[in-house]
Every structure is written in C-alpha cells, then in structure tokens.
Length: 154
Image 1 (tube, helix red, strand yellow):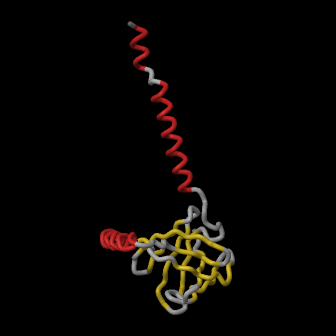
Image 2 (cartoon, rainbow, N blue to C red):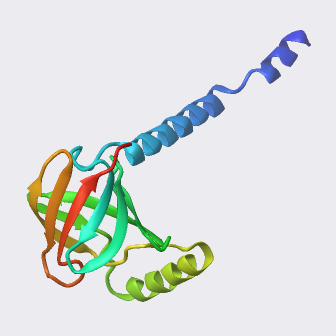
C-alpha cells in the first residue's frame, strides 16, 4: 500500500513533459516580444519640435520596436517603429475590411483611456542623426513637415 501512495504523489512523466513544454513556449514568446528590434541609436526618450507646429511632443522609442508618442495636451499614441536605411517608419498600416474595425476599436480605446494606436504608417526621411539630435522630414510632407528630435536625459 505504501508504494501506491508514493506513486500517486509523484507527477506522471507525460504531465511533467507537457508542463515543461508549456513553460518553454511561454519563455520563448516573452523573449521574442522583448527581443531588440529597433535601431539602438534611436532607443530612448526624445522631445520633438516641428517647424510648422508649436506643439511639443515627447516620443519614446523602446528597443523592442514599439514606441509611445505623448502630446503636450496629454494624449498618447502607441506605435511600432523601424529604421530602414534613412527612413524612419512609424505606425501600423492595416488594410482592407480590418481597417474600419481597427479604427472603431481605436476610437473606443481613446475614449476609455485617452490612449490610442497609430493606425497609419508615417514615413520620415532622416536628414541628420547625432547621439543627441535627429533632424527629419516627413516623406510625403503631409503631417509634420520638418521635425527635430532632441534626446532627453533618462
């Protein structure tokens, strides 16, 4: 009888393997999410000033390729980012029927939390980049025109 009691308290090898596989899958997903994807020169917090707009904006680029844009009025937007050559790409580019749903969900998120997600992809041509500043121009000259990013101390 004693041997039966001991056998019941030890986990079955199949169950143990399943738990190990699940933990490894979770660890790999977490490490993938936080794996650095962005250009290290941009990672950090920057103050953005625009030639055609007096509004001050703070932009934070995270190493995992995500960012947060905060306008002086307090509104925030989250976005993915990447640097391709001398082009800085910000935001998502949803397509087709999902775009209408994504915009509706984004409006609800903004109404509830004051935060939103950039649902359009913006491209800026990087004109000059130093460790403390970046000068860039909107590729399509639609939204921001020319902008200067100044690194803020962390």
